[in-house]
Image (tube, rainbow, N blue to C red; front, side):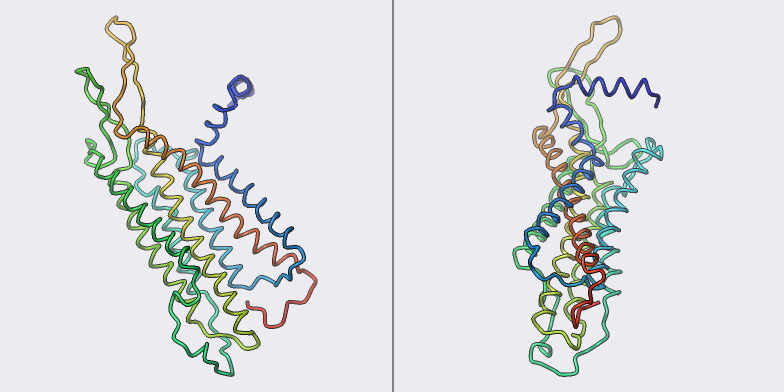
Length: 338
């Protein structure tokens, strides 16, 4: 790209209405991710300033590992997005894996995190709270958080099945197209790319794997032995924070995949088409996009999802880093985990 082309792009951006420029920027997943990073950092800074007088404990090794899990999910999704969109030419390839990348990365990262949780250092003195049977819900997040995550899984599954049912098969036999009719004409339907079963089935499989990995991480966090020198209340609070972070990472994986599905579906919501040829003047025809308004709205929701996920993962990482680096040079509190 030469300097003259960049200048031309800049001139067109300056001449375009602000609303159009904003819509164009939000249609880019990379721009949404960048905006989410800014939002996530701002949220952590404001929260830390409000709680500046509160005692801050050093981040434990488990919490740092969870922050690393958030980095892994964001990095895998970002690399896949850049490689498919800007580096590799996949125009002749059906990238069936693209919506399953984020939930699969979240599931794999949470499995590694669960297996890496420290299990040494059991209590020397047994208390009733310790001998009670613990499950994945013992120190999990609140019921509303678990319920919201479950509703998100169900919603993502319903949307995926609906898209798959509306899709049509391409000449190669893959279910990754949709036929859009042109009303009141004898023209053949237009066939465009759509998130059908070819994309949906890998996504559903990744969601199932992610769900199992989330339960494994929550259970591992709950049943591992308690440690000497740490009060029961402090340990419970720490485990609840870790469980909440686990659900945040899992939610991020689901939302990133679902946002990708919605963006691809939005691209099929074409409103019109111009046809010319055989010496005839150009004619513009309306295209009948099934539930076109909903598909366009879904694209807007996808941008919000990507901003929210990027902000959530950034906040998880920055908050852990702030807690750790904020105490450099000061001794860690007695009994700190990690």
